[in-house]
Length: 240
Ligand SMILES: NC(=O)c1ccc[n+]([C@@H]2O[C@H](COP(=O)([O-])OP(=O)(O)OC[C@H]3O[C@@H](n4cnc5c(N)ncnc54)[C@H](OP(=O)(O)O)[C@@H]3O)[C@@H](O)[C@H]2O)c1
Image 1: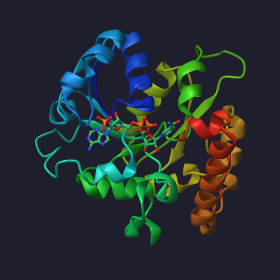
Image 2 (image 1 turned 30 degrees about the horizontal axis):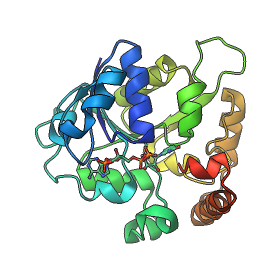
Image 3 (image 1 turned 180 degrees about the vertical axis):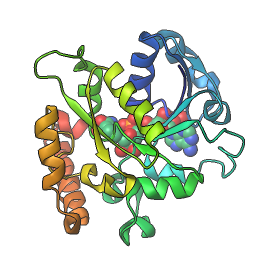
Image 4 (image 1 turned 45 degrees about the horizontal axis):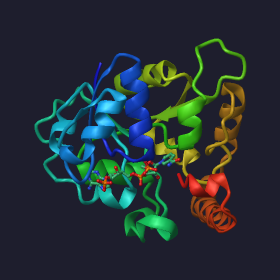
């Protein structure tokens, strides 16, 4: 498939690397322009492009940038992109650690609903609930015992089917979590968040989550990351 990746940090580069290795044609962009990505792109087998070209690059476009940066993307980014193109949001809102306060999310809008509103396009939520290190190292072929499962949320069945296929392709068991309105079940700090669970355990953890605790889950997760950073442990340094 032709896949555009917007964001070339930890997550964007890992996704691009794995996708290119699996034979997809990957275009990758960051905020500083394609020239800054020449070496990385050559190393991982992707094409360095501008953000605008990444949005137009493929059948799938992955948004892998900090949540606050989504507001800086050009308003017309997807204006000429066919509606059949699947847009994946992998972001997590971290108000205290990185993003600053985003009022709409603080008032109850879900992370990915806010992203969809900003870019003027429906999104499918995936890959936000696995740490970069695990995404890099833990994908295994279908049928392998202990294979980690990743859930996907979205309102378009066609888009979700494409993303579920991509999850499997990358070495993880795909789990359809439901509509985008249920994607809070894998936002930061929920029982299913970044736990590297197998499919049955992941479904149980998603079901266990309590919608009234979204803000509390997030605050607990941020507090934990802050403690881990202070202690210099790996989960703190790989800040999701
Ligand atoms: N790290 C994890 O373990 C993890 C796991 C799951 C989900 N996530 C989520 O995935 C997203 C990306 O995380 P990350 O860890 O990969 O971040 P990161 O390492 O900080 O990389 C961020 C990337 O976004 C690019 N960027 C920033 N603003 C941009 C803009 N306006 N236009 C285009 N590109 C822009 C940056 O490009 P420049 O360097 O050129 O500015 C950089 O390549 C975040 O929402 C994060 O919460 C992270």
